[in-house]
Image 1: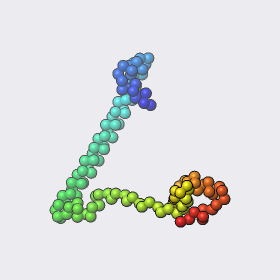
Image 2: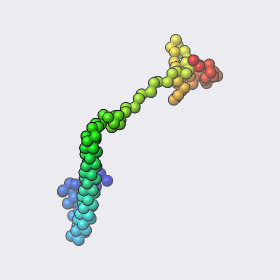
Image 3: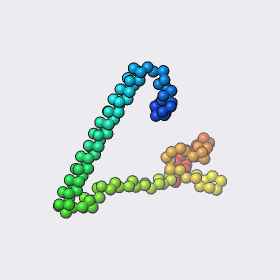
Image 4: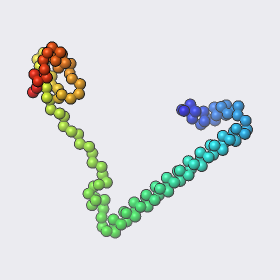
Length: 130
């Protein structure tokens, strides 16, 4: 589709692409493009009208608030979206000592290799509980 748009928007490439078309086919193509253009213009106009109506409503509400003596701050900050809180890391549930180094694991996600190796040797996860 990208190549089609490049041909359509580039003058010489478009001219070369439609060289084989008859005048009647070119008029047909122009009609179809004009129809799409009219539809897009009407959609843009509708969106513009909707935005104008929205802005008018916002201004009306703002004037009502002024008349009553309210401000946006009086609304309790509902206009500002709260930021998501980062949760605390999970505490380790399992622990093993390998070559003098303590390896801990929460029990979530992929099992560390050192734990897998010990399980394969016959130990159970209960042996590693903290």
